[in-house]
Length: 326
Image 1: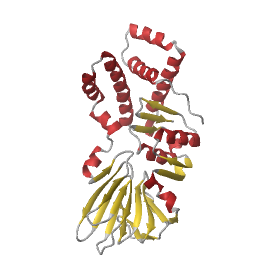
Image 2 (image 1 turned 90 degrees about the vertical axis):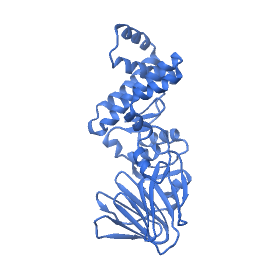
Image 3 (image 1 turned 45 degrees about the vertical axis):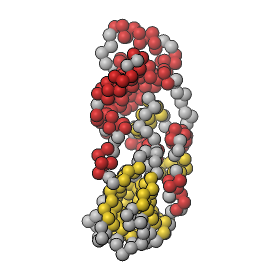
Image 4 (image 1 turned 180 degrees about the vertical axis):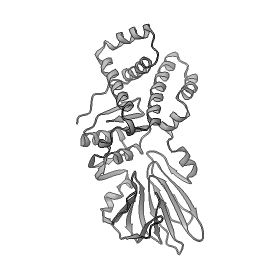
């Protein structure tokens, strides 16, 4: 589906400002000024775009959490406040006013949704960053964008808790077991190369070389992966190992994302990990739509356009930080 034409940035900001004002307590003069502004066709198109996006976000029931709806409202108000403060030239006061108006919860939702998790972690890769860490035992860990781990190395065991995201491990051979915990599952090795990815359903483990045992908490069964195999686990238990193409499954290490018959929600989540702000997907049927392709994640706007052509959805970008897909 072709990308819809976007209004100019200034027009978009004015549309958001008018939408915020007209959904508050507009005066009679405000209403008249608004009608005069909307007589220009480009202004009407921009306003309808913002209004349509908000209507979708406000009426989707369980498809969007209440805090997300509240945060979007706060975000629109924040943009309108920035516009007014910028016009008045009070740049310093604008920052403080906006932070107070937006509220801590709204700011965290948009900019730092994993703040508490990051505090708990020992190592964090920011959005759009891949970070390589050499652990004290000599093992090397590569974190994908927007990933976090907690590490506990002792004489009895080496343990890594993958809190979110994806991590690749080159494990230093040792008699001390190396265990990666992720979403109530454990990957146990003595010396191997593999990656573990937290997904919306649970986690996925892929083995590049060596030997790897994957098990679940409070479950007697386990599987042993061979090089070139992957296994997923989650609410439905431990899956069956399946063969994968290692160069594609681990392409994220070079900034490339290869996906085959993957849920659209999971594809967009991967893109979101590589950009600032948030991506909101509206509708469970759309979230479950299956897509296949290959993306470079250095340019996330281009990646979104490519996925739009694959999945055929409508997309609104508000203020440069929020993307609504429906």
